[in-house]
Length: 363
Image (tube, rainbow, N blue to C red; front, side):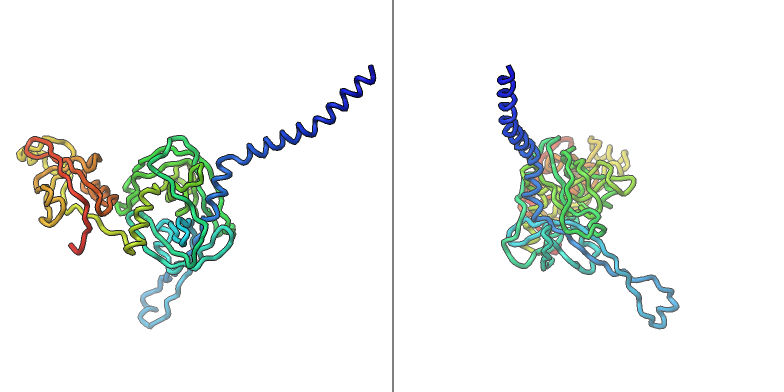
C-alpha cells in the first residue's frame, strides 16, 4: 500500500513542472494581445514636438516713448506627431505649431533628436507637415478611417504633459470608437476650422497628445488626436480625432504644392431663416431650409454648371445645407478634382447641378 502511495506522489511531482510551464506560456501569450503588438508596431514612429513662443511683455506707453527695450517672455509648449513615410515626413496638428516662434526639438521615442524643416500647413483642417532630414525612418502604416466599427478598440499614443515628464517615450491610452462623422459646435472651432466628420473615442487625451496618432488594433493610424470636450480642461471621456483619410489628402497637397490648394464654389448666399418670410412667399420659395443664392461669379464652376442667383441650395453632396457656413464647411472638405452635386430648389421644383471642384486662383 505504501509503495503505491509513493509511486503516485512521484508521478504528480514529475508532471507538475511541465503543467506549470504550459500555464506560464498561456499567461504570456494572453498578455501579448493585439493592443500590445499594435503599440510595439506604432510607437517607434511617434515624435514629441517641443516649441517655444516669445511673447512681448506689456510696457507702459511712457517707457516705449523713450525706447526702453521690449522684454520678451519665453513660453514653452509641447505636442505630438508621427512619421508616416520612411522619407521622414511627419504629421501633426497645425495648432501645435500655430503660435510657435521656434521648434526647439522633435524627438523620436528612442530619444533620437531629428533635424526638421517646415513643409506646410492647412489651418482650416488643422493639419501640418514637417520633414526630417535623412531616410529609412520608422513610420506608421495608414489605415482606413472610413472602415471603422463603433466599439472597436483604438489606441491613442502621444506625450501628454511631456514637459513635466521630461521623457520622449510616448504613453498609451486605450478606448473604443464611440462614434464617427461627429461635427463639433462652431463655438469650439471659432467658425474657422473644419472640426467636422471627426472620430469620437473614449481613449484618454490630454495636453501634449495633440498631433499624435490614433491607431487601430493592427497598429495602423486611423486618426490624428486633436481635441477634447471638457468642462474642467482635463479628460472627461470625450476625445476627437481627425480622420486619417482626410489628413492624408491634405498632407499630399502640402508636400506637393507647399500649401493646401483652395477649392471654391464661386457663390454667396443667405440662410432662408434670415430672409423675411413675406419676400420668400413672393419669390415662390416653398422650402423651409436652405441657402438663397445672392451672388455668383460667372467664371466660377458653379455658374458654368448652371447655378444662378435666386436658386436655393438645399443639399451639397447629399449633406443638408441650412446657412452659408454649411456651404463653406463642405467646400473646405473638398479637394481639387472632386465631384460636386448640388441639389437646388428653383421655380417650384428640385434640380441637381453637377460640376468638378477647381482651384481658386487669384479670384
